[in-house]
Image (cartoon, rainbow, N blue to C red; front, side, top):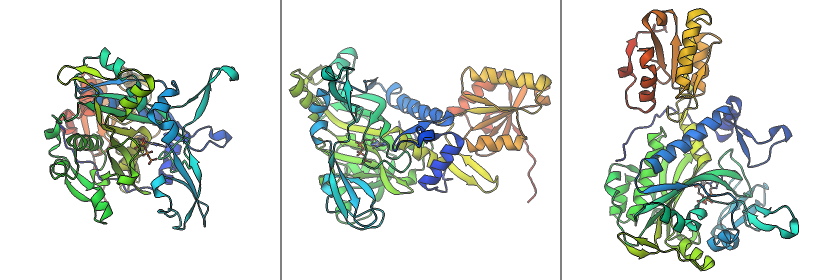
Length: 502
Ligand code: ATP
């Protein structure tokens, strides 16, 4: 069942460049190889960035693979037999059109169907077409040039799910309908990488191929009944209407979203973002125009997010039918049909392919978490405790003697299970501010009263409320707080803090 939870609404939105500056200053992400001037489209993640990114991927995997019965995961290789990319159509049809603005010289990539129809997104003048490019990175496999094979760095993770489909099905006990998930690097030689992490040349995808026997109904559709969001169909776009807020379920019932599986996955993915603290008001589901769809797609919707640069694709949902399995059958001369317990011998359809970039999810969570708190006069990063790089920071109030010893013990014990920080320098206010800025949800203070009472004080980042908790219970209390299994007020005895006079 999808739990609805309202997001914090604290973000006063930064520009993408301001977010990039903040991320660099705090060690989330830097231009790759910056001491040599960097390389456009490549980014390195610092100590905080790598934690946030890993947490996003872990939460995605838990939600989509571990918590479901109908999904398994794989980890395919980045370079594979080039025939995979011939069969998929990427060698022949994966093409971007490079354009340059007549007036301001701005470079961009557009889709083939947009040629002659779109104007420069910087100054509004006409574009000149510079040519068509295949964005796959080419590499040679084998060190001796004459014997080497020309291959590609994968431009998406999806294809190995199709190429390995039979083996995956044979190795697992999956019955249709089922999905196969993968998280990993993808590479595209983008014409114009820009806007910080939004368009990179090296990025990561979290993808699912969801298979059914044609006509199978979605047994989970009732789970999304409560999910409401902005829907922007092809018809609304063609007739210049506004997107309409409605229940995704109703959009399916009214035939706006044609397929129950499509409605289910769009609502589920939106809910995943909201459960992890994203602001639901900044999302909409937009249907691709007929001319915009990829060569393989029957119907495609995008989950879009209102970035400071405008509405942009966050996650794609293509109905690929059995295009990919058929192509791999033709090119490999091997049957891709499976013997299913209910459907019998069948070549399944991919009824939906939810495909999300880790970097774009990273941006969404950062934008929605960032707040310049006027009262505290510092930045507070309201990241969900599940995503926060550090789950807690431990502060000894006195950095010597028994208080220091007990704080080190608390720190060591918590470190067994969580990524926590030990901070003994500066005033307590300074330590709170430092941790608010990097999104640490809980700060734990050890003082002299901790020695007698065998307890510590926990301060919650978002409310700044404080509670006392017994040291012996600290680990389980922190676990419950991170997992949202207990409210902060119920987790310990309230501490009355002095309120500053205005
Ligand atoms: P766009 O139109 O923005 O180039 P796309 O339609 O080519 O995206 P897909 O092929 O559908 O993208 O890829 C699925 C997802 O992978 C996207 O929704 C996005 O989250 C992510 N993604 C694609 N290209 C990039 C990129 N260059 N940098 C970062 N993420 C990307």
